[in-house]
Length: 203
Image (cartoon, rainbow, N blue to C red; front, top):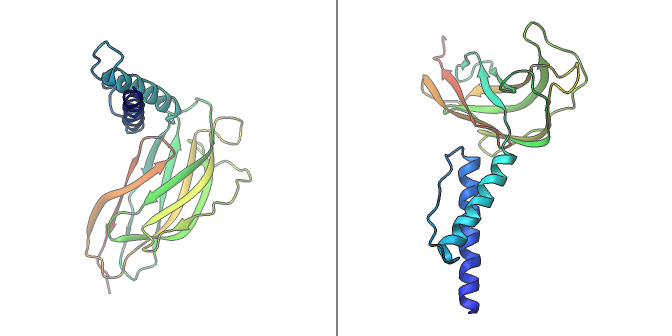
């Protein structure tokens, strides 16, 4: 009897983890099979239900994107990339609290460790004293991480778009070409693709 209970618990846990993973990845809900006897299949399905619904509720309803094109040559002066965040309808109020940010540079590029944050209206940049961003770099400098309070449209100062301006530079020896494999991940919001082009040294 104890073995059956443990098996049911394990099945529920597997379902919960899978449901949560699917919701956070943006996958459609998968209706798992049930056998109608409260057995292992039922326990897995119940766990999936719970995990999917709770993770879906946690998912941040934000739009993240890269503003404009970016290019740099190895040994050049470096450049910067703007990563923008807004609500889907531009006016919804969101106060998501402290969220983990993980930015992966495109192939051939690395971060220089500088990040600035500001709010930008459609027709002007707003003022306001935003807290300093304190980023950390991976050993190869391709991954940039930091925690920051994400809020939009909660008052007159944080309207429209939150913009992170991140210093970026081409890696020495990187071959010329355009790369689109960078990623911007902010909490559980949908990921954004980061793109940049390595150009040849004109000298």
